[in-house]
Length: 256
Ligand SMILES: Nc1ncnc2c1ncn2[C@@H]1O[C@H](COP(=O)(O)OP(=O)(O)O)[C@@H](O)[C@H]1O
Ligand SMILES: [Mg+2]
Image 1 (tube, rainbow, N blue to C red):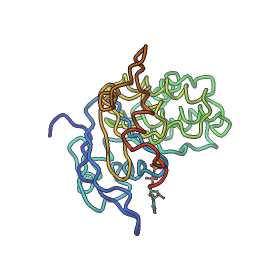
Image 2 (image 1 turned 135 degrees about the vertical axis):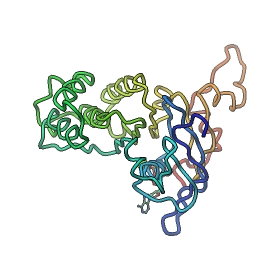
Image 3 (image 1 turned 30 degrees about the vertical axis):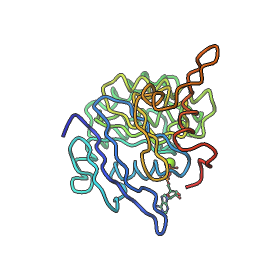
Image 4 (image 1 turned 180 degrees about the horizontal axis):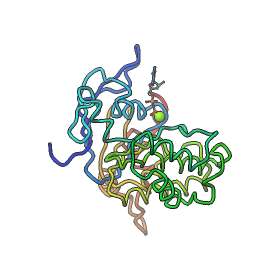
């Protein structure tokens, strides 16, 4: 199977009457940062839940590192980490204790060393011995992402890594994700922020109305957009304009 690390074909999922995924297709290549961009309720978390074996699709096929998510869930879990929309750390433990606990659970050699390295990498060394529930929102999210790196998973899922953060904390988390991207892992992140996809992703897929309606680099997406109106200076469309053009202007983006 090509060099796709994540491969998704014709994925369908309904909740009772509501058809959330109506045939989702995309591939993510090794080492790539791939953004799944969609409005609130588009089905991003549903895709991530299926890919991380937490939920079964109704139809379709998905694989991670050539392991089938439905038939080889153990192997899939072995190759991934998932950072959800809400911080999964233990607030009663310190940052360092949280890291140590997960390192031990995952059977990593030298858990103390691993914890200290990650604390340093994510600029949390000074807060290492403070309880995690005393951390700011941005620090919690950084610790959460650090936790997901333990055991060096091949594929990292970041589900809305900056939702609910203030602009400053969002920038901190962006820096963190940019560092991750340099480490060779394949990253699938979901976001409802166009700017976030633009900042972080090598390629972007737009999930809308239960399908991927466009996939490409920012440059490719810009090419799909009708040429910029030439006045005196040619103005490049923003990703927001591209998004609105693709899904059809005037349509309520929150309406599914
Ligand atoms: N377990 C569930 N049971 C019923 N409906 C769900 C469930 N999970 C998600 N949904 C619905 O599916 C739609 C997509 O949800 P979700 O994947 O969380 O979207 P996103 O992450 O893009 O905001 C929403 O309308 C949501 O209410
Ligand atoms: Mg979600």
